[in-house]
Length: 155
Image (cartoon, helix red, strand yellow):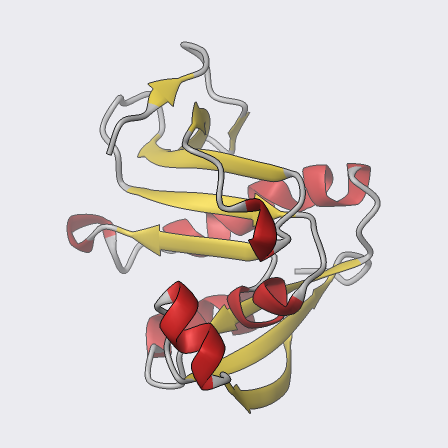
């Protein structure tokens, strides 16, 4: 996939990972993702992609099932807490954008993602079936765990 690094310096860092903003093709407007922030996750100070994280600020049926935050960590970098660190680095941006809480979804069998949500202090709201029309249109799993991450709670 074609991507463009927005700048040489990361937008956010915790000294372990950096979140580097990138420009991707925007998602279809009909998804209702609203303002969309895309980042590459890299080990601190490196230009090696370890994964990606995306923050979606809209509210829509698609966001209900995809969540406000989507992330993945590439296999060689898994098991180091990068996803939770990346989410934590976005917390100030989420608050600055006026969100008191966001949704993170995970497949029920994706134990590492579910543990990431627990590590962040998220609350499991529900396990929901994804309508077939949404599954087919957007290629998403048939069941999602919906976690609520409240910005006013401690990690």
